[in-house]
Length: 160
Image (cartoon, rainbow, N blue to C red; front, side, top):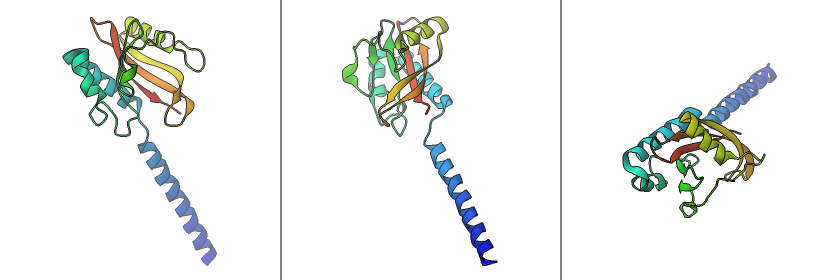
């Protein structure tokens, strides 16, 4: 009888540990809804304040346009493929990315530009080096064109 109780206790402990671990892992990830909401919010800021007016808020790592874990942030690329606002590395702003390809050879910046020009907004997927894991991972990015301007706002999310 005591062995049965120990077995049940261990099984309960395992299930509880699994549940808590899964819950903790889930809370450490971001959703595509969160990504799109951040992109929409940054888009509204760029529309309201313009590029120069939006830069300080988008660069502020402790501000509302960065997730608390600093995995999510908004960036802006123009239709020539130049970084207009790149919060993780502002020194890279002005750099041309038009011919940048992902790990599989996909011309991801060209695809983002085409998507924003033709659809106005939408999702694109590609494989990119995750700086947190140092591994090539699938990434999904939401892009949204700024009407009347030659650029789009975007936010990306690593999926695996």
